[in-house]
Image 1: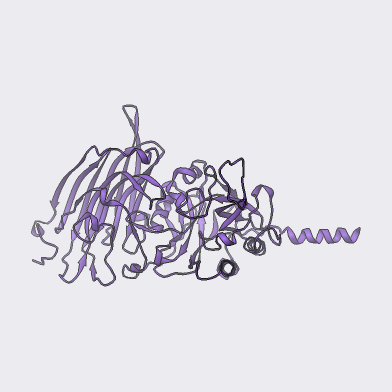
Image 2: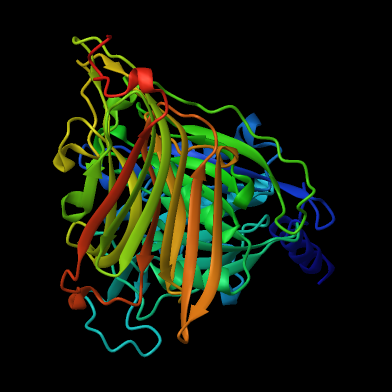
Length: 530
């Protein structure tokens, strides 16, 4: 009996490891790691070989010296396995550590074990399988009795599964199921931070992403295989903007396959801006480590890391989709010397006011240069046919010629491109519906496909009521000169406007005033040095 008791005690001691905290609730900050992970073509090898190879790379990153100071590590969407190698995942309420439990696939077992060995919180996206139906779900089930989900699984320092989020807003993803409603998933840590988590395309919707913030969560984990799109939705651009608007710490881990438009990883400290971020032009595998100040400690020291910033020429290797902006109402900026320019543009219920000061430089005839247009939009778009949504925007857009159809495109890598226009200041003002379901944010991107630093801009919102209707007056300003802008805008989603009730165009209009600052340059052509 004594021997049996000793063996049982030894097994329990091996299985339950006391948490080795790196950060504590008393600390002003915690340490996070986000992984940019090279996404490989899953058709080039057998699914089990693919999953095994990627699991090995994941464990190498977790065991690396770079990960030593980290409390929590986040991995990207669809980097680990696929439908053929989907795994069961314990219900977090059951408090199970799948390490060495044969019911679960090797991916889940080994990640549980390494989380325990390294004493790290891990957030890993994988394809999960689950018996159906679940929770009285009356929807048809697959003949094999299994649902498959795109799932973020959270392991604690002892390898227990403490949270499980199944992606609700799918972007295609054949063979993947969804829950009946969007789950709002959070989990607590031993360093005093409660996290929420969602996945990729979820960011474009109210549920569950914005509901997490409404519930008071200040730290968000985002796994993604984003397909970047000009002019408003390149990966780090929208990650920083979402974090800023909601004033949350945002831990984003991106799949890395620039040839299909996937890259974008970073850690963002709410309204204080990015700590570290990258948009790659070549596929890469790298762990980015950041010390993250807690949102409720505004005096905590924030150390921003230097950008991994690539040139516009290098970034032509990153494939970028183009938004459906041809329905925007727009006008071109006069390409004359030193100019003050004011314009008001309206479409449907939205009017935008622009006040700009910019300088146009001479460009030799053998070089290309970006022209610019001001644009306004209040209408519906499709997200590649997978969903439709209402968009509202006041924007300055770079274009490769004088037409709107050339905006949100770039010159190819054979072109010699000059930065012909320096924007000394930009101010955009708009009045939008005041409902919380109209979600607006400051939005910018430069020619390296990175957003401007928050210190280079000012953003403000003012709520007011007129005739018993609530409105938001929004102002977005550029306060540091820039000559490499691709877009600068107030951009957002209108969740209360149903996609199938797009409004008839009520009015489009423009008024503009051009005031050259230097009479000597008045009327100068961009290609006329005289």
